Length: 251
Image (cartoon, rainbow, N blue to C red):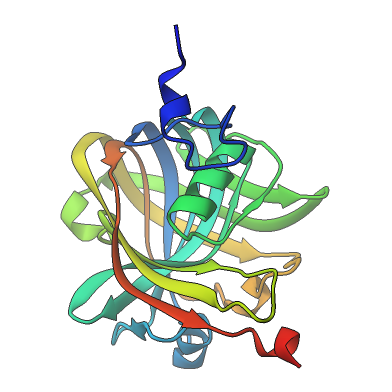
C-alpha cells in the first residue's frame, strides 16, 4: 500500500518526507509561562517590519514539554513571544524559539515561518509547589523560568495564544533571483484546558548563542502560570507575499 504522505511531497525529500502534512494535534502543551515587563526599545528591537508591536511592553518567556503528532510525540521547547498587529490582525510573534526535535523544528520553520533552532532535550522539573524549566544548547544554559503555584488560574488572564503572526523568509541561493518574505497568520482551534495554576514567577536569561535574549531584562515579573492545554494547529493564511533582494549577495 502506498504511503499517503507521498502524495503531498511538500518537504524534502519528497519521496520520503521526514514529517506528515498537518493539521498538527497538540496532545500536550505542559508549560511554564512567565510574563515580563521590559523597556520599549527592546520590544521594538525584536519586532521586524512590517509588523507593529502592541502598545504595551509585555513579553512572555515560555518553556514547555509538548506532544504534537504526527511530527513529534515528545519535544522540549523554549520561546520568547510578544503581541503584534498587521493590517488589523493581532497575534503573538516569536522572535526567539528553540526546539529539541528536528521534525518539530522543520514544521515550525519550513511551513509556518517560526525562527526555530535546535536545543537539547529536557523536561520540566516539579518539586512540591515549584515548577522549573530550562533551555540548554551545547551544554550551556540559555534561559530558565519557574513558577511557585499559589492558586487556580483563569485562561482569561493569560496571553492570547490562539493567534500567531510570523514572518516567513524563503531564501534564494541565486543573487539574481529574488527571495520571498511572507507574513503568515496561524490560528489554533479545539482548545481544551487540562489544568491551570498561577503564582510567583521567576526568569533568567543566560548564554545567548546567536540570539539576543541577553538583552531581555527579567527583574520585572508581572505574571506566571503553569498549565497543560490541548489544541490543533491548522493550515495558516498568508497575509502578504513579496519579493526582496538580499543586498549582501547582490553586490
